Length: 138
Image (cartoon, rainbow, N blue to C red; front, side, top):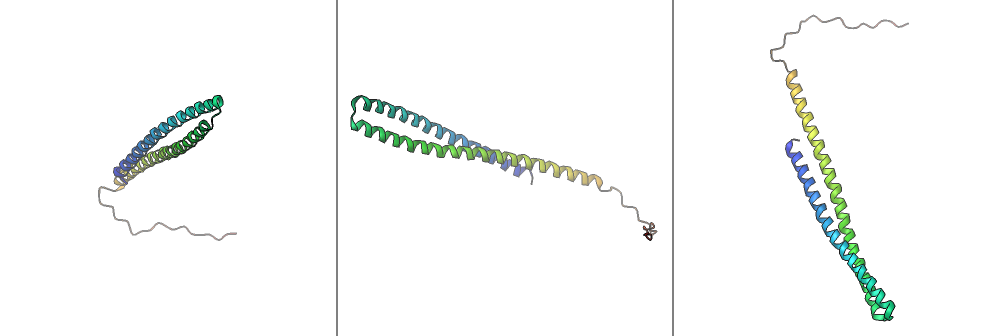
């Protein structure tokens, strides 16, 4: 539980943050594409309203189905982004906890080093201190 574990946890945090950033760019691009498809569908709806042509209505329905598929993919990328952010935060918290545990371990090692006597221990006398004697209770 040394600096290697802290380094690995920080590396994982950066990796997850990068993955979340990539998912964000993919989701944003798909959101823009979905917005464009919505504009296209609206234009097709206006064309249908003016001409009352069934091919315009079919094109509009096809555009809305395509938009739905694009937005579903965008939603999946958004979920990936949220999971990446969550994993990045959790691994950063783990790195901080490992760092604190390493500091605590170092402090305990220092404290144990100070408790060890530098001179040989003095011999203990053979005389024992009187033990506590129980008295009769009333």
